[in-house]
Length: 244
Image 1 (tube, rainbow, N blue to C red):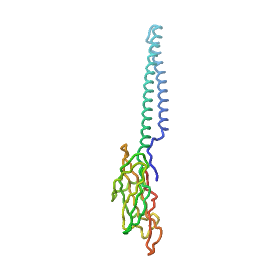
Image 2: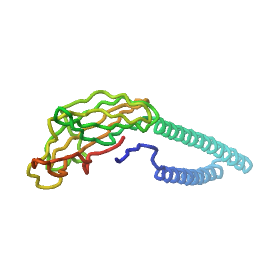
Image 3: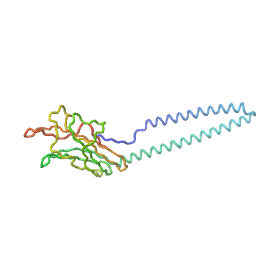
Image 4: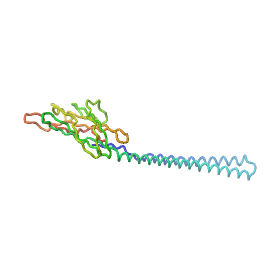
């Protein structure tokens, strides 16, 4: 089953943007410094009468400008360091959550013949994470020409199973549904023309983040009984299966 991991994403684009911003900043500072020096030189030459005062005016104001640039640069450096620290803390938090959260999925569905007739559809649930989860099961069974698509949230679901409390690193078996018999198409047009049971497992991890695992199984013919009746079982559908 595919596993959806929403972990930290590569920071290549952010690094490129950061480098461009720093380059733009230094170019801007250089251009601004050049303009300021030209202005100070013009003012010192034409507005300050004595030559010594003119040199003093130019020197003092140039140093003042350089101090200003140094202060602004230091502020930017501190800001960048703070942003880098925040990003590191965020990635550490995401990594910690991924490591310690629950990972719940439906491993398989098996068909069990009941002694009194009919069948049980037994679900084998697994929590491969490091913390427990309280899982709500929703499902629906129907004839379909095609399997449910991956990118559409199906529903409303006609049935809700019990809430399951799944401890870490545990596999648990529970009856999803009990039927009089396993439905199967009498005249299927293709392999995908079948009865489907599909649904979702909804739960929250200990960090308060909601998760949804989707499942979908379909009936397939496996032979004929002694009286010519169709024998069928359930197999994983090609679509609508995730593990989150």
